[in-house]
Length: 595
Image 1 (cartoon, helix red, strand yellow):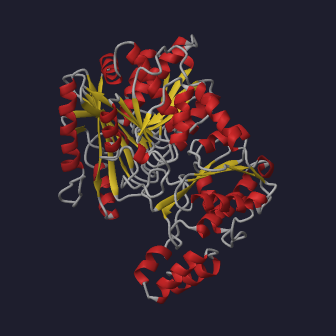
Image 2: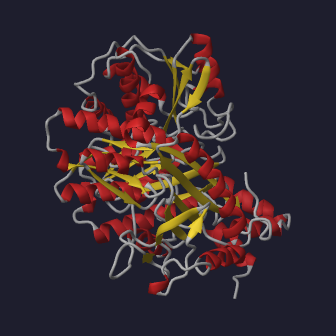
């Protein structure tokens, strides 16, 4: 039975220490705004592996002071219970420039200090990678970053790193969520005296110095280039990245880049972009216009919290934006070349990518002899997989996901847009010294490892029952896996399906993993399947991953084709997408829309 709305409102008013959000709820209640109150009060914002993220306003389903205090109290109790010497090891807290970020970082610190836990509170704006870097450098018990990354301006978030300096995974997400529900009564009501506490430690400058030192270690000694030979334009997308990126450029020996003035400084209003994400269409328009005006060859971009990176190149007057997978391939080859030049055994080199990312690095690994491992989507899995490989005796200097996230070196097991910017600039300058360009170099890699082309998109479906029916039909529409009692499709787009991996909880299956046929990767709460198919007549092949989104009413697909014939691969993708939409999804019949 549902709790009466009146009770939810009264409990909010009893607990909320913030006068502004309390008045907001009182106003809605006094004006009988039942619909709005239901949206804000009925369900509680869910704590998961990504922490918390949502719209900033009053209510149980939103981001606000009360939610941050309760989350911090629950996290603190969980950390004290599960991590040895947590109180003396302390926690790291950082924040970006969004509305409320600084106050929420201080409220987080206040909740830990109230439990006699030391807090390393970063002073001023930091980019997200500074928190995991600091957790490792300080041997802290955990870290919290207040940011909503590249979300719209009305959002903010609460991101948690475990003692291994990697984003949390299960069972910690469930344990922390349960702990939050056991610590709902606020023990702190404001953060006015946080900075006065002996338990609040400021080692921001020391950590920045250590971070930049780690970046200097990424400078490839084997590369020779003139730091002034290539002109770069950089956008920080109204975020916190510019001071970090400009310093990284200096460390790498480059002349200063030209900043996109309108987007250079931190601005929580993000006035020039609706979605401050370098991947969004039009997000790089100002940067490209600046590059044209300055005669620059490359545009570099970080998202607002500077953990993601994108780049574009002027190819004979036409701007080409590299995809996340193309950048991943370029970085992987660069890391491989650097490692090879060190004379270390190639058999001890390993790289990691999410399972929905390109298989070109896998092809590279097979030819060059290093280890490649894929894992579930998200840097919480990439980082932990990297640590597991290190435990097994491998060196893991690189990992990536197609959503423009790149991990370099051993000091940060998370994506770092500043490190990626520096490495890309080194690559571009060294290629210029050899008389070529990044895009030309990518074509060389295609000739060496085969041509790879991606076609990633999604179907919108707002009815969960329809989504369930679609996936039920896919699991029962063919004879693939029939000897194990399965009925997956056996063909798509004129290709024969050679393998199926179903990573959905309750349906776990891997057609290539006899005799158990159980997947090697962890299972997902949402639907997730991967199909590999190939042609009987040439070397064309595809990898298709389809999955439900955990945050949006979407069925996402990640499709990659590869082979020696570029045009054949390109044509192949269209046929696969048509079959996926018409036969597998029944898009028209099920009322699915596409972007």
